[in-house]
Length: 404
Figure 1 (cartoon, rainbow, N blue to C red):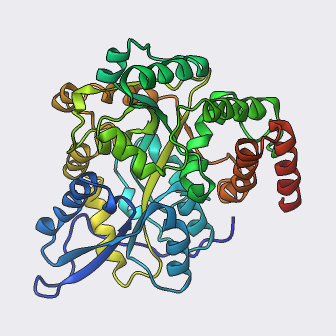
Figure 2: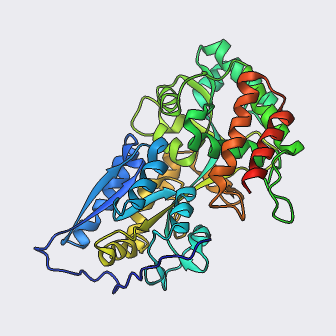
């Protein structure tokens, strides 16, 4: 890890710097601002801070998820970009490694944060606060599954059988999942569920990168079996697949809690008809962790720090809970009984978050994207060209060995 370029974000708890007539603009980047309904709900939480700090005006920088990493790294590297960035762990570690994030020790001091903060502490310096942790599960349309007389799958063979049954009996799509390299960031994180589910760790006991393993080959072979079975709408990107689930055209899907909240909100699909179960793998799956950090380029680090202090306060966390569904937050604010009643899928996600793993490779957090690129190219080779999983992984291992 490179030496951090640290800025101290001094603040007095929720004190409001500057005069009310001197408006301070804080720009906050996030791919979620573009999410239907959920984006509006999360932005409403953020905008509530303007009532607490009337001298602050908050503005969005909305970046599509597939473009977020490249764009935010370019902006930060050019000395530009937002005051605060909401980002996946991989982007967070890249910015931390480049010394582009502010030290948030003053923000988090005295706050009872849960273990979602762990990966935000880099070389003993807190460089972000948790925004959301979204765990993965199998979600399904109860009405379609019941209509087809299908069962909830507990293994890959059962998934294929049940999804085919839904297709044959209802005409709906059997199963949706990311499957294209042009959505590398999302697909690589999603694929960690298959890898982890089959016992992959990507490193051995000594921390050495071990890519070509029987476990990894089994995970790819299982994905290939599903891909070839005819239950996935090949070529559809994830926004299209989620829209089709929302429109009651999909039986089963693999998705995270944030995506599921989006599907279950504001569409033809009633949230009470969405159900969730563990993924059909032998071992626990993954989660996506998002952090919010202050840019070292910000002209207003004190005001940005005051906003973060409010965000992890009881008031801010209560508002985040209402907008975040079952996602794990910075503090242990529980899912409300009212939400759980309306959204019967929520508790499954909350339970699975207790055993899920980060999509980042331990000891190689900054390099995870570099490592996963040849891995996902290997998966693509198996899917498209029919290469044997072990052979494709051997190529990936060679590329990774040459890099590290």
